Amino acid sequence: MLQMKNISKVYQTEKVQTHALRDFDLNVDEGEFIAVTGPSGSGKTTFLNIAGMLESFTAGQYMLDGVDVGSLSDNARADLRNQKIGFIFQGFNLIPDLNLFENVEVPLRYRGIKSSERKERVMHCLEQVGLASRIKHLPQQLSGGQQQRVAIARALAGEPRFLLADEPTGNLDSLMARQVMELLEQINRDGATIIMVTHDPELARRAPRNIQIVDGQIADFTLYQKPTAVPVASVAGA
Ligand SMILES: Nc1ncnc2c1ncn2[C@@H]1O[C@H](COP(=O)(O)OP(=O)(O)OP(=O)(O)O)[C@@H](O)[C@H]1O
Ligand SMILES: [Mg+2]
Image 1 (cartoon, rainbow, N blue to C red):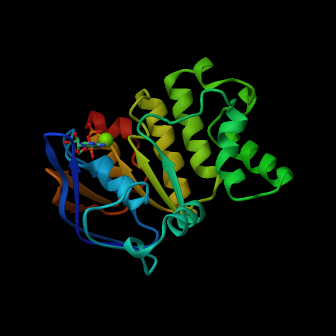
Image 2 (image 1 turned 120 degrees about the horizontal axis):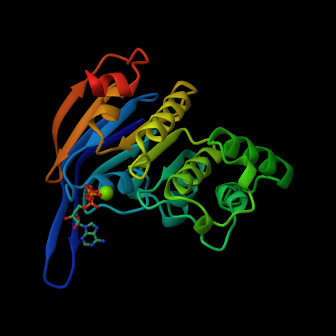
């Protein structure tokens, strides 16, 4: 599904050049669930943003479903992104002036889905994350964990085949984090390919494949067996 070959990303600011990714190689098959770990500043968000076509890359080749992303126009790239990709951002990226319902509805509007279907999908996604009773709330009227769940509902609303999640449990307590992980596992079983950045080693271990990014490169691959629903709490206590 996704193939990256020798991808590099250099950020050039006035005086400093940062190599956020260097010769980055990765193949991801349809239906995989991959956890990405690594130190702060190692390039995890940069990798996700490039994978999701939010950011360009400096060199290398990126193929998504057989399409050479580097050769696409801005419009073609945006279309592909809207069709295929859902994002859960590190800092939520909710729109402050829109209520919960409207925030979750945004990607559906982009796709031109009609109003009655939008309503049904938005409510279904908000129910999945346990916030259907708060559709009129603004983001600032919610806790961090609740905002995180709205961001997840918004990513789900577009029924993406490819879900990219940057620290989706970073602001949640361990119970809530586990519930979010279970939600992601369900979405993966339903067919979406997922790449999740996390600092939580116990959550990472639940994903069938882990990659570690250090200094802009893949430092380590670990392939775990499919987890047999081991509760995180018991793993942590072991
Ligand atoms: N827009 C930018 N301009 C300049 N440098 C940037 C920019 N975005 C990221 N960087 C640099 O690129 C490197 C990789 O950043 P990135 O955000 O990918 O790290 P990360 O692994 O996601 O870290 P964290 O765990 O803290 O979120 C860092 O050194 C960062 O300072
Ligand atoms: Mg990051």
